[in-house]
Length: 108
Image (cartoon, rainbow, N blue to C red; front, side, top):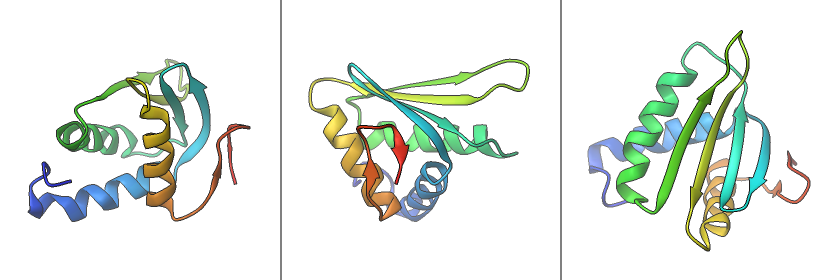
């Protein structure tokens, strides 16, 4: 987190908590996870804000935002090298302050 400027950390944590509380579905990938979010008027802005700061502290992560046409869902893929899945699980669980059942791909 020290890679993120100190004055931006509280906003980044708030944005991250807000985003990951909107997870509607997730899928395990070979090298990470894909998250589908419930839509909202600020979803894409929040994703851009999250990615722009998260890449500073976690340069080992790759980010892909997929916006489906015709009002379809918005997905974020977080991927990386070996061990990144455990990191993602720990970080998101910590942000939400709740256990997530990762093996059946639904929030608990």
